[in-house]
Amino acid sequence: MDPEQLIACPACDVLHRDQEVAKHTVARCARCGTVLAAPKSGAMTRIAMLSLTALILLAAAAGFPFLELQAQGLSHRASVLDAVLAFSRGPMAPLSLATGLLIVLLPAARYGALVYTLAPMALGWHPAPHAAAVYRWAERLKPWAMAEIFIIGVAVALVKVSGLARVGLGPAFWAFAALLVVTILTDSSICRLTVWKTLKTRRGS
Amino acid sequence: MENPEDPPRFLTAAEAGLTGCRTCGAVNPGGAQTCYSCRSALTPPSAYSLQRVWAWLAAGLIAYVPANIYPMLRTTTFGRASENTLVGGIAELFSHGSYGVAFIVFFASIVIPVAKFLAIGYLAVSVRRPATLGSHDRLVLYEVVEFIGRWSMIDVFVVAILTALVQLDFAAAVTPGIAAVSFALSVAFTMLAAQSFDPRLIWNAEKREYE
Ligand SMILES: [Zn+2]
Ligand SMILES: [Zn+2]
Image 1 (tube, chains in turn purple, cyan):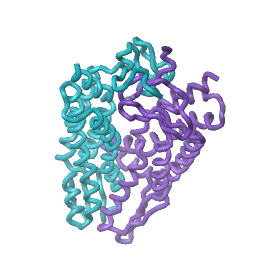
Image 2 (tube, rainbow over the protein chains, first blue to last red):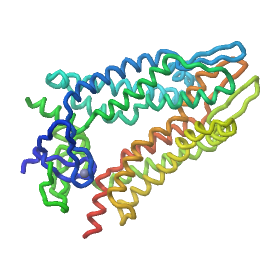
Image 3 (cartoon, rainbow over the protein chains, first blue to last red):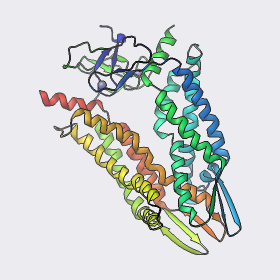
Image 4 (cartoon, each protein chain N blue to C red):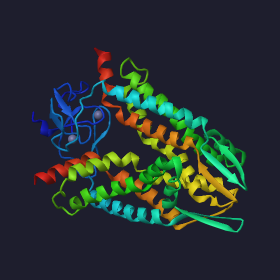
């Protein structure tokens, strides 16, 4: 049998015949149950739009202050950029770099890569140049894009500081909250193997 | 999508002399180095990959020790400095009556990392000898570890936020401690350990048991 007509389960390596799967049905590995295909109509458009939304939210989340603190007549507001630069003095500089990467740069890179690869799919075009490499990086970046974890950190910090001073929420807090929702929606819409299959067939056509 | 062979005897790509791609599922010829479909580097399921898992896991464990000993935060209020370790910060939240938040931080900074060390170690050991957990349960364990591990980063972000926020000149200032760096490294190393683990090995061990 031609290996091109087979698909190997990424979790357990069992071979399956790569058949057309009806829309809105899910094909699972016969041995381990890993999803092998989950085509949905309009999924590419949905993911591309969500990723674009996430990029805009990220820009707002990074630039605006997320918390404001008042004590003893003094006030101080902090944005993500402030949090990133907070460690830049002295021996904590690597932490500053890591925070900036995990909260802003890697999520932005991931969503940018998703828009780049999936928007042409959504519009029915040929894949953009190097689409396979870009999508591979989008998948690899996924665990390291931690913008949605940051909001839990903000909530914990809010409680920790509340004994010390009055704290108020800034606009970026709501941008991060929206980003949490958009991230969950994006991740639940993406079926990795279906995206790869679409990229492969579009390239051939 | 059905198995070419009759169940329950499953044929894997490796057994058929082919190499399956873990990124896109494409089936490549046996000796192929890069996937024809997605251009990822191909690695056949082999116990050699466990060496990487053990190396990252050891690095994560080593970094977790200073993360617990040294201070996460140093708070200066009106000239008085106080330092807080990971556990100290949780205890303080608890003593202030913020039980919910104390529980979240305790879960993210203590329970998840320790459970992750144990789970990855167990998965890596279970590949070589008969396991007490079935293959399905171990795959679920692997998926849970991969999903939940990154949430440990919460406390590092809390330190970053407090440092940026609490800069009120003489009244109060917060500076990060060395433990924040080692904790961040520990989380990153264990994430790499989980990513280095090849779940296809779970099923290889099962095959050996039947032989
Ligand atoms: Zn499978
Ligand atoms: Zn591939």
